[in-house]
Image 1 (tube, rainbow, N blue to C red):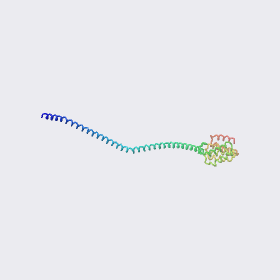
Image 2 (cartoon, rainbow, N blue to C red):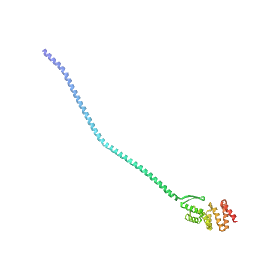
Image 3 (tube, rainbow, N blue to C red):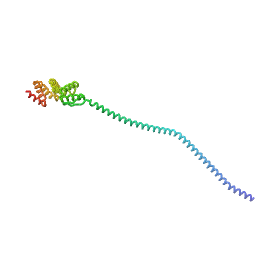
Image 4 (cartoon, rainbow, N blue to C red):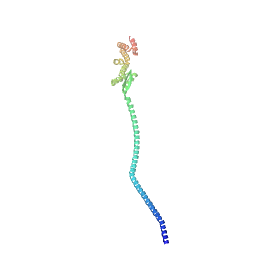
Length: 259
């Protein structure tokens, strides 16, 4: 009995030691199992996250692809615009050069035309205290006729001065032409014609600066024709009308010579 009791006691004690060991084994298995499951979940989560990231990246790439193409197209358009701008800039520079050349040519042509037209434009003339406009041809013809008078070519001068009066009847030179016509006729010894010319000049221009000279020339023509009575009357008229002139002093001397 005692042996049996001892045996049962030993078994009981052994059982007591075995029970906690089994409990510890069970707890380790569960922990490992939990760790394995946790690892599996982590891996699964990582795979899921990677899959979602791949999907998201694919979506982004898909959405970025048109943007990339649009960006490439935009860059191409920008390059094309730059090329067009450079081309237009070059054209503008060429147009500016062409415009400058055209303006320079127009200026040269304008100056050339002005140079050709200038001799044809009316010119201001100051003669015997008067200013008036004359055409270049008109002035040339007048000066040519007066040149004949000064050279003593009286016959040609008379013809030239009469031609001038016929062509330029309203010229500002008319009074001067009549005065010199009378002198040319006197030089040609056409005294009667000279008298008529001087009388017409004096009657039409009593205030002319050369009126006194015309009266003296008229008296000289009358003296040449032996018409001393008319000459004295002309000289008296000269002295009374223009007393302070050199012609009046000459008239006084002529009067003394006629007495």
